[in-house]
Length: 131
Image 1 (tube, rainbow, N blue to C red):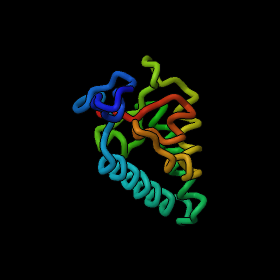
Image 2 (cartoon, rainbow, N blue to C red):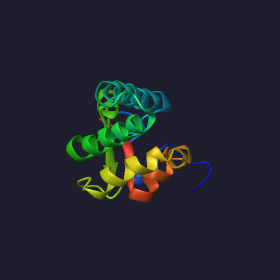
Image 3 (tube, rainbow, N blue to C red):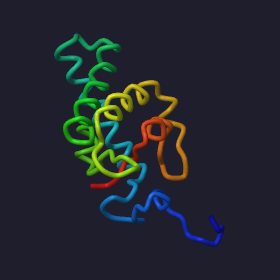
């Protein structure tokens, strides 16, 4: 890519710079994960006595269920984001199941590229986009 050419996250995948299907910024991403974590804390406290492993398990389950049913966790959806496959089409079954397991490891989510894709997204072929 020519260094004089303007680049924005998602451009190499044909995504717009802003608006629907663009790559959301960090504030929305952090807001989404905080919503998911707070929801996980609450559900784990009510149903499992608020132990650490149950909080993580609920978080993973929320992401898996949301990914399979709505292409995004409750936090993603409230922050107007969704998970999209890089190749286009439907999200499928593998990405919504594997992606949350990788996020739970924390490190893959911190290893981001120029398109704001963490290692968890690169490994399953997805990108987070605006709705």
